[in-house]
Every structure is written in C-alpha cells, then in structure tokens.
Picture (cartoon, rainbow, N blue to C red):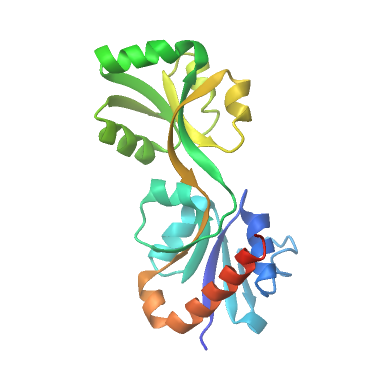
Length: 217
C-alpha cells in the first residue's frame, strides 16, 4: 500500500483536525510536538503530512503535491481550485455574511434600489464578485487582509462580506447581517488523479473519518 500525502491547514482548524484524526486511529503525536517541520512522515500509518497555510492547502491538492487535504469551505469557495470534495467534516462551522452598520441598513437598501452601485470591503473578493453578480448588483470590491469590520465604521465601504461564527465581532462593531451567503465548515478534499490511482487507500481513510465523525453525534 502506497503512502498517502495529506495537506493540513494550520490555524483555526488545526486542533480539531488533529482530534478527528486521533479518533480515526491515526498517530498524530508528531503533529502535536510543536515542531517547525512542515513535512512529517508517520510510517506506521503509511501517511505523510504537509502543514500549510489554509489558502495553500487546496493548491497542494490540485497540483498533486498532496493526495488529500483538510481545509475550510470558505477557502474552497474563494480559491476555486479543481479538487474533489469528499466529505463535510462538520467542524469549524461559520458562515459567509453580508453586513453593514445597523444605522445604515435603510440607506444601503435605498442604494440598491436607486443607485445600483455599492462599495464592499472583504478578504474574499471572488466570493463577493460571485455573490453580487448573481444579485445583478454593481459593486466596487475593496480588498482587505484584516480588520474588515472596520471598513463601514471609517466610511471605507458601505458593506462587508466576511466570515462569522458567533456574530460577536459584528455586534461589537455595530454591524448587522443583511444576508447569509453560505454556510462553511471543514472539508476533506482529494486530487482527482490521486483518487483514481489511490482509490483503495483514500476510501479506507475516508471510512475512518466517517466513523470518527459519527462518534461526535
């Protein structure tokens, strides 16, 4: 049986991913050591782990540097990489929302009807472009890398599109949700060629994750 290469997203999903893998019977001890290594081999499981930034995981998988990856649906929506989405892992849950200052809600809706143009700040420009294209609304998309919630407060933008889990950050900045764009969670993805060549190994791993996932319910 050949070794499976699995890309894991560092950051918010990492600890829950390790917990899932552990429940699935995988040896994650090397991943928990806090090593600076970005490539770790676990011979007992015939597995090689690649640790990467979330937005790079789908790239590793698309180009075959990794057979599988675990990453958020938000990344898949934004990067639009050609990968095979195998399983919703049901953790890291959040949602893409369109939000604006609460006092600006009526003004924003008026702009929709009469001006037909709006400024929107976001980290997720592709998600924003797709959303407004479907709505038939002209929007100027302003790319930000952080502190997106600040944009309406300082009059940089009328609205924002961002991820929200509890809604607390929005509330703290006096923002309200105008629309929910999509629900997101961690997903298991596969390289299309790998899925054909390593079908048996990948499906064995997939079954392990499905059983581990059921244990939480």
